[in-house]
Each structure stands twice: as C-alpha cells, then as structure tokens.
Length: 549
Image 1 (cartoon, helix red, strand yellow):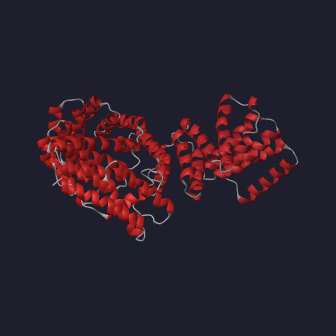
Image 2 (spheres, one colour):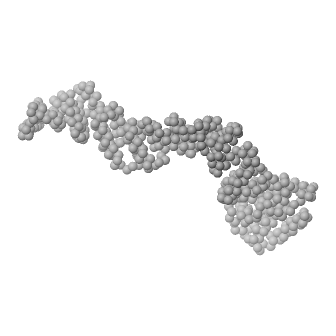
Image 3 (tube, helix red, strand yellow):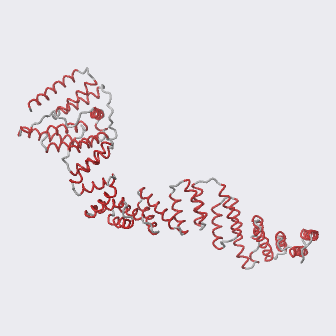
C-alpha cells in the first residue's frame, strides 16, 4: 500500500478507534492493518493490534504484535515504552503460545522483575537477574538498557564500604567483572586495607587474566596476614601468588615456615627466592638463622657473611650475626661486637636493648663485670626491681669467685634492699656471708677494703628503696613499684622501717641498716631513738672496718 496522506491516515485512525471502542474487533483490525501497511514502523499500532488479538483470544497473534511493538520501541531507545508492552506479554496464557514464544516470555519476565527491583532499589536482585540473562544473551538490548539504569542509580547512592562491597560481590558472583572491578576499586579508595575487597580484586584480576595484578594482590594479602600472625591464611595466599609465578612470595612462604619452626622447609623457600634475587637481605638473614637452627653452622656462617657484605651496618644484620656467634660460642667475634652495640644502646638510652645485649654478653662470658653493671642499671631504670636484685646476686657470685668479698657483700646488700621480702635472695645472702666469714678468717690476705663501692650511690636507688619498703610485702609487684619516695612520718611507716633495719642488723648487713637509719633521719631529724641506733651501728661498723685493715 502506498503511503497515506495525512488526512487519509487521520480518517483511518478515527475509524479504527471507533470500531475498537465499540468492540468491533474484526473491523478495527482491518483498519489498523491499513495503517501498518502504509507505516510498518508504527509501534503504537502494533501494540493496539496486540490488544485486539487479545480481545479476540488470538493469544499467539497478540504475542507477535506485542513483541514487534516492544522490539521497535527498544530500537528507538524507548525502553520505558518497551517495558509497558512486556508487562502485557507476561499476562498472556502460555498454554496457547508456541514453544519459541514461551521461551521468550521467560526472558521477558526477567526484564519486568529487573525493572521492579530497580524501582525498589533492590540492587543485588537486579544484578543477579541481569547476570542470568546476560549469560545466555550477552548483547540483549533490554538488558543493556536496564544495566545502564542500574549504573545510574548506583552512581546516585553515597559511596560506603559496606554497601559497595555487597554490590561488588554481587557483580563478581554474576560474572559482571568490569562492573565489579569499578565498585571494588571505589571501596579500596575508601579503605585501602580492607581485606575482603583486596581478596575480591585478586579473584577478579585472576578471572580477567590480569595475572600481574592478581599476584600482587595475593602477595599483599599474604604479607598482611603474616604480619598479623595468621600463618594459615598467609600461607594460603602466598601459595596463590606462587601459582601465578610470584618470586617474592617464596620469601613470604619461607617466613611462614620460619615462624612455624619448620626450618628445613624455610630453607627451601629462601633458596628458591635467592636463586633469582641473590641480594635479598632479609632472605639471606633468615636463611642463616634457619641453617643455624638445623645445626648446619657452615652454611649459616656463609649466609651471615653475605649479609654482612651487603649491609654490615644494618642493626638487624649485626644482631643476628652476634646471636649466631653467641650460640656457637665464638667469643672472639661476639664480645667486641656486642660491646660496640651495648655502648650504642647506652648512648641512645635504649634500655630494652641494653638489657638484651648485656644478657647476651653475660651468657657468652659470665665474668664480664661491666655487662652485669649495665644490666643492673637498665633493669632498675625499667622498674624491674626483682630482676635487678637477681642481677646483683649474679654479680656477687662473680665477685666471690674473684675473691672480691667486699664488692660481693655490697651487691648482696643492694639485692636485699631492692627486694627485702625475697626469702630466696636472703637465703643466698646469708649462706654467702657465712662462707665469706670463714674465708676471711682462714685467709687473712684476702681481706679487702669493705668501704669500696660496687656501683655509684644515687638518689634513684634510695627512692626505689623507699617505694618498696613503704608497701606490705604481699602488695609488691613489678607494676606497682615506682621511683617516687613516699612521705615519711606515719608511725606505721616508721615501724616497718625499724623492723627492716633490725632484720639487716640480725643478718649482719650493717651498711644496709645504716642507710635505712640515715634515710629515716633525713625525713625525721627529731627522732632521738633512731639517731642513737645509727650511732651504735655505725660504731660497730667502723670497729669492724678498722679490725679488717
């Protein structure tokens, strides 16, 4: 049929509408077909034809007319009109449709559900439906249109870690990888350490074939879990990175084995890395430690020498090398290096390192007096009075073996002052004092100047002493001891101090008793009884001193 003039079309449309409204379906059908013959792309007429066929109960023809209308609307970018037609289609009785039409309606029902989910902002449901249809129809125009609407709606919601993580997971689950990547990268901008997001990105990159990006994410996850101490998770991700040819993952895997005390396995992993990265300092360092732990000292020495050559000034390298020398009892190498490191720690006021290096030196050479002294000073600074008391006892033992009885006596006195309630320390002190008296009587030549001081006197030790004796023994602990002197003067405090001084006198610790009385008088100058006691004990002390000369 030739193209209708405008007036002719108006007349036909007017007549078609009249027949339609009067329920004269056959006559209306004839008129609408005339319009389509002249203008096959009139989608509204196709839709009306579908309505007429539906009224006539011609379900298959109704479906065909509706489907043409919807397809036409889609091709002209009118997805909203297409959806209106699709909603008519899903109401058709499927029992009267062809198999092909019934298959098509399954997809059409999906379109309508997606549209409804978007209107209700049920984005995860919409994503799942889009994913299902796209799996069978990657280029479905209706799905493309709905997907664009989904993107627009997501762009309007505030970016939040929780919300976008759920969206990204839904996209990833339904194989919409590009969209998943965009969402997860937004989450990472908000929270760069979000473990779940990083794992999803790793899986995403892997699916996309971006191996370099995937192994980078897996390696980062392995390193993070290693730092947290979760060795199982760290190992899982390190293995995934290794599967993707990550060289650095062998180092992480080696560290996992090392921390898990699987030294042989750690050696294998470190050596795999070092075949490619020959100057990897930390791998060499832990390779040396691992070899030392399995008893292969020659291989350990070789690895440590390589680390020293690479960075001999590195504190971790120095410390590891010295620890190895200490364990292998290489005094000639360890002691000079430990002395240097101990001096640096003292200079830098790094008390924890002073304790560590002092103990290492004492382990290697127990007779190094200066190491004992540095250890005692550091422990007192840290407030570890019981540890300092034990260190005083250890130094006393060194002095005793060197026949320096006066120095040993003072060490034990200081140990008693620091922890007067420590029965073990007291018993050691008493036993040693008895032995000392026997030695002096048997060997007069061993008598020494008992006024000689082992360590410089300081107000700090006095303050610690005051803090300790101001509390009942059951309340003493490392955490409760401070370096703040309590105010003296209460009868209870004085009685405790008096009892302590008397105990020192009974066990022949005269100097300790003198110090207690002097401190009491400094805070309470008017105590005549204390002054009298001090004079008496001091006289006994001086008499013994003169007799020993």
